[in-house]
Amino acid sequence: NGETNYSKAVDYTITGIEAGAGVFKAAEQAVEDYGLDGWEVQASSSGAMATVLGEAIKNKEPIIVTGWSPHWKFAKYDLKYLEDPKGTFGDEETISTMVRKGLEEDKPNAYKVLDQFFWTEEDMNAVMLEISNGGNPSEVAANWVDENADKVAEWTKGAEKVDGQEIELVYVEWDTEVASTHVVGKVLEDLGFKVKLTPLDNAVMWQAVANGEADGMVAAWLPGTHGDLYEEYKDQLVDLGANLEGAKIGLVVPAYMDIDSIEDLEA
Ligand code: PBE
Image 1 (tube, rainbow, N blue to C red):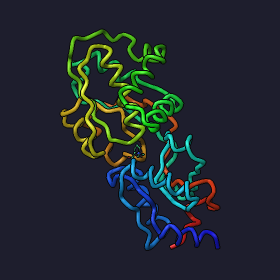
Image 2 (cartoon, helix red, strand yellow):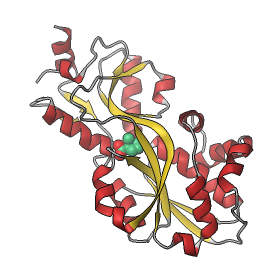
Image 3 (cartoon, protein in one colour):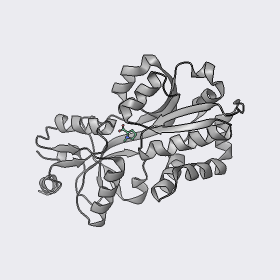
Image 4 (cartoon, rainbow, N blue to C red):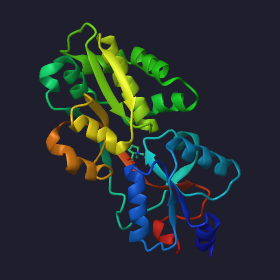
């Protein structure tokens, strides 16, 4: 049947991203949970995954990727999540902000902005799409901040200007996090901070905030995607809560594939 052909046609391979990503680990768990013996989740990078997905779609070929939303790929291509009746990928998630202990005392104005930072999937999509179309992340973020003064005013409410105080935000080079981190970074810069944005691997990002090497991050996907890292570090971090709601991870395929569920895949 068609499903068998799809499994064979993709060579029993799920096109993954960085091995440290939560969605990569969840995909490996799905292989186990759904008894997909002989399947492989191929480690790659978010950028390479997006390129391979684009090429497959251009050629109308089948492909299964580790996916997440918000993400510009849903605006650019007609895609769908495979149903996950066993719940391996979890339900709706929030993206949360985590800062180091002591930040509130050391840099109260930065703390205030990070605490108040909250936007919507639509906001994030606008920034992500422009970056995916070749925009420079800093420039795209600066334009968004200029054009959304009302929203930014909510985030900076009660925060005072500073004079060159340093602040370091860490992130992973996932499209979502490139967008959010550059926007928050720009807002802090406009307040007078000297902002450093440092891309790291996922586990290292969590560790850097937990041990106080970095000031904070806006890239914690919870409760599922980064649940293991949150458990490991939550006592060493200050959890400032959600900065975006309605995020999701899962296995994603082009809509032209006649398959609906992970259960339709065959070992
Ligand atoms: N992601 C994007 C990350 C979180 C943000 C879904 C690729 C992950 O899987 O860890």
